[in-house]
Length: 356
Image (tube, rainbow, N blue to C red; front, side):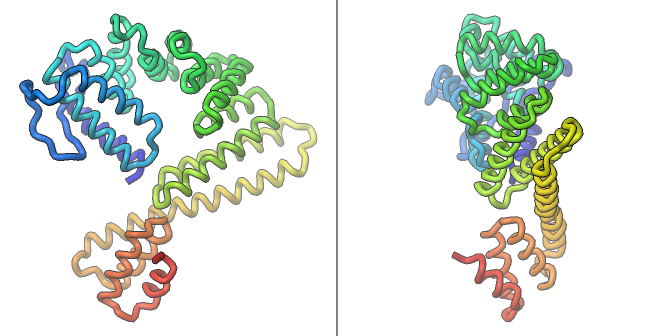
């Protein structure tokens, strides 16, 4: 399961626990789950205090900012859901509850609800010193209200100087407000503060450099962003989302190179060579993405015909698993195929390649 599917899945689940205030005038308590079996939450559970629950939920939200593995994210989200459940039962008026609810809404991309809760929190005594609340509030507003978001990012920056995520937010505001040079300056500061490790910061910097007509630097940052995306693909074999990110970055690089050719009176041959290479890279990436569509079609066919799936279908399904990088599943599928077709040459060849 890729990262996008997991977040969307939890968003659907959480939507039942955090319904729109417009629907009923107030929020409902959150229902919980966990990666471990737990008893139903009751108000008299003595094991963990409300303060401890708040701290664990805050830590879990912060952990999500650095976790990229899909399975690990799912486990963290499960813990958060359980902790919100416990807190709403034990301390429904706890001052940190709007903060936690706001961050939960932000994960569900319910920006209006997230902003409502976070505004309530930052006006409280506890919220006035929590930089993450101001930053997350800025994140909810930056697309539609960049000037307003800028004020919240600045409050976050006063509490947490030189934080890459805040500097990135300020750069987004500047870009949306048409302040090209300021967007570049802040984008560079964000990448420097982060050490160039976060893909979206580097990709954003490439974009604002392009908008400012700084072609050489824009191209250099685009190359760095593409390399970060390739590394993510290698770290997560069998996952579709990293490939989609790479595909988007390659298109961004293509757009950059085409814009450079159009802007320069005499584009150098290296620019044309780079554009040709980017076009070829994107074709290959799209081919790999289409393999996931092939795999899903074949998986549906196997599920629909189970337990009497024909060997020909099982063979093609196993090959598709191998081609998308789901090695262990492919091995199991080829082994199942050999039970039905002992001398299948395709299974024997692939197993020789896939097994350690």
